[in-house]
Length: 290
Image (tube, rainbow, N blue to C red):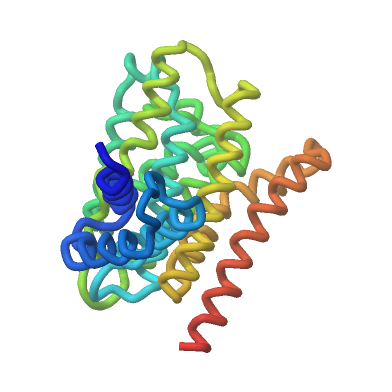
């Protein structure tokens, strides 16, 4: 394989970071431009071009992911609620015990599917059941011990908070006038599927292990940084709003357990908060420029 063919093949692989529709309309033009600007014996794209193509592809996908005919705030709120739901059920469902009592797991899957499909009222009803069930010790007090609960009953406010954040977000979306919500990608279900599969295979409670906590922290930082970059690309606050909704349960946990966090923990939560605030600042400035 000569240098020209090798370079073109690598450029085409890099272009896969762009949406399919973008590649269809602009792919050949972009390949031609890149090839024309390359040296005669170049076999690999320069690192600068690789980074530029990856950044451009991510920006194009962020713009392509915007829901059509839906206000930015409704789009962002749905994304935020979906992020809270998938991560909460991924972390708070212990697979092995719930194989014996599957009602809670099945209800969680039904709720996530309803949010993904944009069925706001159905999702609101399911989320309210989940919130009341998980908060029954606090809501019903002593009467909770006489109930045949099908799900976990938490005593910490931070454990109940995600479910009520989901309820609040869905309540706003359910009463919103106008068209319904858009359907989201089924790939959101990979989040709980991965966590449940990992727990089932390893047979451990991964949230309590240091490697899992570090991995989750890294993913959260990358995800909120991606939300910041998407905000720059989309030029509105939908991604910033989604990130803020996702962060609410975490900040509730921080406030409830503030004395247990050292400098590293406070620095971590401060970094997440800074990324979300920066997203809103960027969104406001880009809207003013537009």
